[in-house]
Amino acid sequence: MTAYDGVFTEESATPVVRKVALSHLSVELGHLYMDDFQAGRPRLLAQFEAVRPWVAAAVRACAGELGERPPRVSTCFLIDDYFTRFSTPRAVIADLVAAAAEAGLTIDYVARESGCAVADGVDVATLVRQHLVAEPPEGDNGGRPPTAVSGWLSNGERGGEGPASAMAAPRAWQPPRQSAVQNHSIFVDIELWNGPAEQPRWSCPFLAAVWQLQRLGLIRHLGEPVGEPRPMTPREAPEEWERLPAVVQLNPHAAPFRAYRTFSALAARFLPIELAVRTILGQVAVDPAVAAQVRERAGAEGITLPGEVVDRLRYAFQ
Image (cartoon, rainbow, N blue to C red; front, side):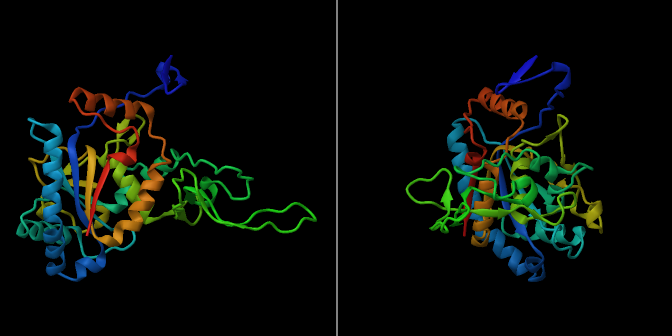
């Protein structure tokens, strides 16, 4: 018998959790949407020039935390091919790499947002959805459907008029209330998907949460990692998005794609999305065996990781 966080399972029923290579820091250089690409090279160049100082600062901070050891740092870029298909992977990746190089940056890995939904034949988004543990707010009476049914997740209790018993006067309006409130509530209600639960159309925040979990090396399917990076040059990239792997390794000398911590340099328009991402990740129950493995490996390097996944994420918004 084996125990993880008080849950006992048969040893034979527990799949072996395969390790993944881990950097100290995964740096996201940005997201690309169709309107950014259509704006041409100047928009891409402006993106990379804007994030370059933040990237340098993040790498210095990581090096400072490690002391004498050189940091293992990899860079990545996420392309939205889930909500809108545009151009071709070959053209998009070539333009990204060229613009980054002009700004003095190197893109080690490129990822497809569709790969946060399905990668290597595995329904990754559903896998993460199955690990959601949405905590009902205090005093919940079942009036709101559970997240697995509604597709909505919140960090507390919605406002509105409370239910009244038969023949009683309506109750007074109650404001929304955050579950882990500190002085004042910041209530967030997030749509994770729409459409039927068996064929969901995932929301941007939910796919972004999957993306963060991938970068942190915390996703496994039957003990195996999903979306392993595949080496490819920009010229080798296919013309069809469906043929592009979920994660492509462009730099053969890059540090590992996944890392103990992530840093994302993003435009200010992504701030609401990342607030939603952090809310989602606060209610994802990571496989205890995977979580323990990552913590132990960090400890062997003298690194103390925060217990909460969201505390391993860092940002710069401009």
